[in-house]
Length: 333
Image 1 (cartoon, rainbow, N blue to C red):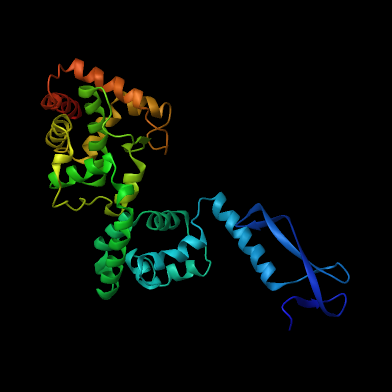
Image 2 (cartoon, rainbow, N blue to C red):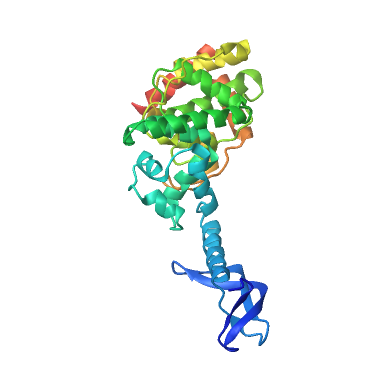
């Protein structure tokens, strides 16, 4: 059959057709969504006719609209993940601890939950996140072959994006992970926050440009959270080598003091520290302790607070940070 002709029930014959684009509305999961679709019309009688690939495209447009409105990863991004990291669909499910066919179903169009979607989006966006997930969960795979292939591909991929990740905050993270024997993602987040605050107090400038947000568990740098989320409550793997000549003497003195006087506390203790401090409290405002928020803690608040702390605790050198953290810890007892 000529692909440009289709059967028209009104004309009782195969006819050519025209296609028009118009706004449509469809229901999905109990909600109505507006989207842009297409309608085919018989060129002979102008009646609407059914064309399979056009109806399929309309259904996809409805699903795509649902995904966008609800923050669900696109089907295109899902399909790209196995190609991007050179790994099969089943091994991806195994890495994530899902049912063996779960990722395959998502590739066939099934809609992931928001929780699963967020994980897949992190994998798609961040090769560092995927590589650490691969390392952490490689025992879930039935053999090391898919792990080895995917690791080589991802490491080669990262060579091309290393400049993107070679920022000041990432240099700081590299130093902290090199020096700390045991630091969880939660503790790392708080260390970054205190590095930023005390560096400003001693140098009148910020260590890095990144903003943190006032999350339930204290200040959080979102991109860094996404990168190390797969570790959950476990310590992040230690960085074996790091060139500390990348930092000035002032920068290094702040880093060393934070590692000594802040990173000695657990992530949960540091979380409690930040819950008592003005930048987090003022940014959260009247939100209750368990309400999620992406409000940015302004650098002005951080600067004002840590300048005041430096004055109150008569800090002459970065080593004096210990007087502040000991005082906060004493308040928890």
